[in-house]
Amino acid sequence: MEPPTEPSRRPSTAPGPQQQQQDGAASIESAADPSLIWLPELVQLYAGSLHPNEVACVLRLVSKATAAQLRGPQHRTIRLSMPVPHHAFVQRWGGVGALRSLTLNQRQQLFSLTACSGSIANLEALVARDMAACDFDEWEFKIAAGAGQLEVCRWLRQQGCPWDYWALDAAAGNGQQAVCEWLLASGCPWCDWAAGEAARGGHVALMDWLLGTGQDLDVGTLLAGVADGCDLPTLQRLLSTHFTQQLREFSDEWTLAAAAGSPRTDWRAKVEWLEGLGFPQSAYACANAVRQPDWRGRLQWLQQRGYPLDRDVAESAASVGAVDALLYLLESGVALDQQVVNNALQCAAEGGHLDLLQALHAHGYNIAEAANAAAEHGGLPVVVWLVEKLGAANVLSASVLSSAAESGGVELIAWLVQTLGAAKVLSAKVFSSAAKSGSMELMAWLHARGCPWNRFVFRTTAAQGCEEQLEWLAARGCPMGEDGEPYMRAVRNGDLATLRCLQRLGCSLGPKSERQAIA
Image (cartoon, one colour):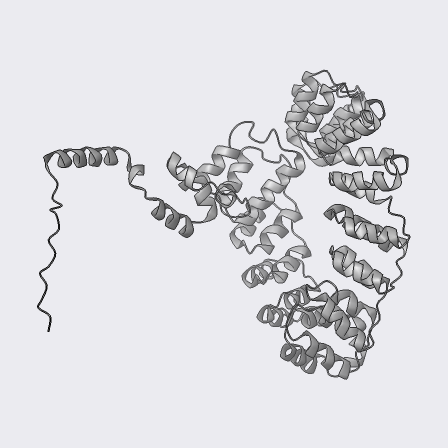
């Protein structure tokens, strides 16, 4: 046996007088600035436990060190559809002129997203600042109902916000049973397809509750919703409980098609069971299946069972941007009519899918129309490729120029000026289209290069409802017109903020008849 070893002797770690003085000074400094004791690993732990908006609005502002540590997009992005700390929200949106840079559409989006977040305090801050300077409408109510924000729904009703059956539709589709119960108890209009929307979302208990109300039903939507969003036992239960006697009447192709496109793993079993009941086969089954990520396996399985591929399948693929599926259908010999081709071009242009454009071109389809869709989204690479392939004269029409300006992208307009020359691109119509985009950067770029403007530019800007842009145009001498049309555009939008801005800028009310209409 080895003799026991003597414990190792370590040097003394007791601080000496000088070290004690340094530690004391550090303690005083830490007490004066608590951020010095925020260790990076603790900050990371806090960030993981806090709501993302609290990280962006609070934690990052503790010190320069935390701001440097939490510098990723996930730490700096404020999601308005989620609760935003009230102090930060008021600081950004509650001040005088805080909304001047927003268009009417953006102001309405701000309100809708805030309603979705569930913060009544933040909604009240917007109302106090005249926010969108427009009345609440059914859209805001639908957004709140779909998000399950019951207290916001109550608050909106107290403010006189209208509602319609779309509120119940949104709440049912998102499984918000408490909101559905309150809506119906409070007299909200009934929606015939609400139970079907609940089923499509997989909310079986809510579907059963809505069925139990005894209200009228859209049976087709209900069956398709269950076939799509529920499992096979639920589908079997519904048919055996409610539709035993009327099965032949409701055995349409849409129910089986919904099963073929179901995101659930038992979609094959549902298709086979419905086939056994006599539900008819159709190409709509493939049209639904092609929307799913595993579309290839689904189409092959359905084709083996005799389901056809046709233009509807291609149109469905185009509508969801399924480029690979469209290429597969083209290679399978599916003929496309012009409507489907246009949808496919839209899909390719919006997503920058040159491979799809090349395939359509190789199959003899006219792809020049893709230029408009690409220009609308600022898709410079697609426009450049089309010009190289088809020639500028066949691609760059006046509508493409307007679409490019409406996208708000400086890069695309600059390329067009370089390619065609300023004389062919820079016009009052292009400036007016740029005003529709709401892009101050593009408007300033056009003005700096001498792009002409006229009263229609000012009128268009008034319709967009951005005070900052109106003031910018007025300060640089853009004609306002004498017909009062800018006021009329704001009146049609119910946009009080823009009406006040036009008045401040001295815009003419126009003839007496126009002034009376505005009044």
